[in-house]
Length: 268
Image (cartoon, rainbow, N blue to C red; front, side, top):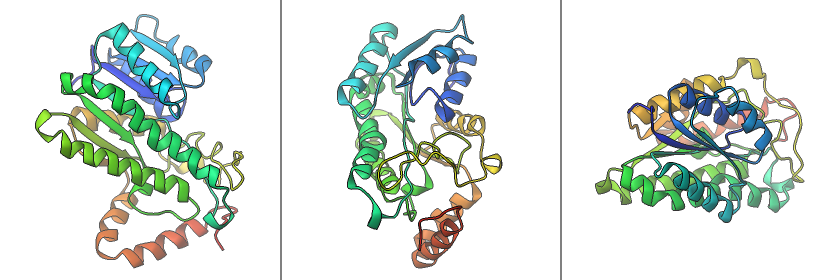
């Protein structure tokens, strides 16, 4: 699948992986629908591609009405949808014992319900085009990550939803893909929520050693073009998923010890 002339909806389009995806799609001649809360940042990105066909929609995917608006306006302008990339997401960092339950509610609203809402409204058009629906997830959707209860639970839920959708539409040629980057250099950790729901503001990781958003975007687009079921982007992630099937207790200990080494880890 080439992307020239294809209508692609990207949520969380104003920064990080979403921005990288939009830039690469616009470079390839796709008709891109950019959806995010930061309209000025999306306008700035779009201004670099004066001759491209791009639509900018201010939206919060945790709101069902906003997700309906994204799809309604995309179809109203372009007449169809070929690819939906559910990329919008937020993270958190706190142990459940200390956590305000509203933090998990907020992560579920964005990471899980945002995917469900957008997919629900886009599905008739994706089935008609025999297109692709993508969830940008994480190894946290395969393996529970300590101090990330809200994040892991939202990604596990996303996986369950998309995997079931794939089976339901098996005879309708819908392509469903789950993309799992490694830790990626972006602002997601700066905006990650702490126990009381406030952004942590500082990243606990060495951002220079992480995957780049460009690299992640390339792998996602390659996976869509090849209509892959899943794309796990790091050797570490592949090992966690593989070993977790046979040695789950061992992997739990490995993951705990790894996450405990983070700067200012809340793990005891």
